[in-house]
Length: 224
Image (cartoon, rainbow, N blue to C red; front, side):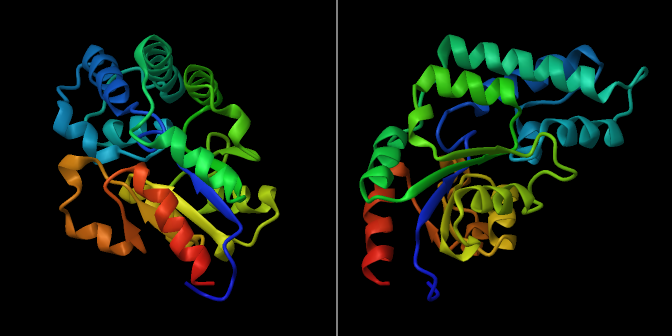
């Protein structure tokens, strides 16, 4: 940890606070399948953490389909995901207690997500967590989504905290790259089926789940 004192924790949303990856995967398989793309669950893992327009572009570059309309395809996927979240979305293990612990420390709390406004609203409504956040930033209207660091830099600026004074909590490698590029202290909570992969060594700390975040943040604060 450098000499900038930690003053904020910035959370990614999908896969960190809400178990939305199954909804994303089902929606992508469904919508792309209707367009004639034979993608499977394993294929969807390649684009975890990317903004939805980037996901649509990724697959169009590999399996072009007629009448390409990125926005319409992206919107169809987002609508399915939002409906799935509102119907059956659940918080990730330890997410609510982690938010409460950061608020109690007290640290500023931000949200930096690739997801669009309808999804953010669906998650905040379903989990009833909107009151925890000092600011909410989406990459939806930025030139670049993650792994570009802009959404994290914007979130730090909105919190009025230097990036070096932020801990970023991510689950995807694209998100981790974005947070590292923003010069933040990085915590990664990868999905269990990916947890053993060597790439997570790029993070400052890897956790099994968010129940471990409070103790880790306390360690960092004590070490300052």
